[in-house]
Image 1: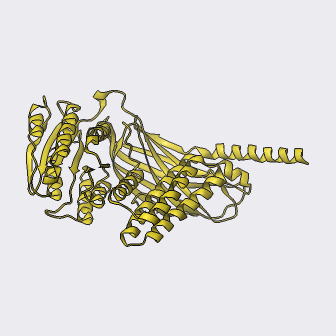
Image 2: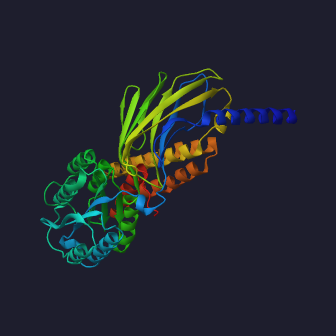
Length: 453
């Protein structure tokens, strides 16, 4: 009896592996770029038959690192530095040194402008070629502190300098904003800065935000970065600024694509429900997401939860078809990638479990917890600690169950980390530093931001 059971189980497992392999790969029909690859994956290549099932579709863009520095496109960069009174002492000293190191990493033909702001905004160096860098270095060393924080004015002035060369299609357009304080001159709400970010993204300009210390508004900074598809950082100790600037330049100097539009078509019987972690649009059977820039050496992706109608065992169905259009910054041309993906159906639980894509599940878990952290922050702000902790516990439980079913260690680790966070949140709430960390980590996870350069 035991031998027959083992033989039956082995046969089921072999069948599961066969199904998983045959349904695993998406089918790309066009690869017109040397540096971007499109792949559609699903959390399980085999879905349970004869039942309505939810699944996670991942549209992945894998970007190859540029093999030579001379292949990279030139950058059009504006450094916008807070010089309000709160930046005095070590903060401004470290900010100056980080900016100097950034300038030294640029090439003579890159375009850079330097903006400083306190109660007023001043263009210290208008947009121009780096050249030998001497004028920029002198201007950076001369930044002194005083006054309030006209953050909105600083960003708009930096963007204005970037616009002077934005129509030249060769350049990667970026504003890097550094601030340690609350915006208290001019528009100052997260909503207003978010609208500014969205407007700049339409122009192909990303804003990276670097919050220093514990006095800045993390809601404002993360919103501005997210809506413009830039990076965001929280630097509690200003000594880390050089490392952060190096990480940011690692992205800026490795842009391989920009103005990226991802369009996904879902066939009848597959209903898109929501994006997980990103603010995409869903209209009927179509979904769309726009990204400003893709970086070599990184993966960017979108996760969409879908509802799949019942199919009979042994059946196969296309689950998604994607089209990605963008500007190839290396070859200076428009490019398009397409791919589709099918899944199969089985009455065998072993077949479904064996077909699990652990990487997709782990990406899903990370984004689910990022969204949960944002929800928790909002609840703590409303004096609902218990509800905030409950959100984290519920997500932790759901992910722990997923990890147990599919033997997914990465998902188990995400779930395990959330449990003590929930206990601490219920007991202590969120301090200033913890709140900033929650907001920043959530934004970085949802944007798949890489800080390891």
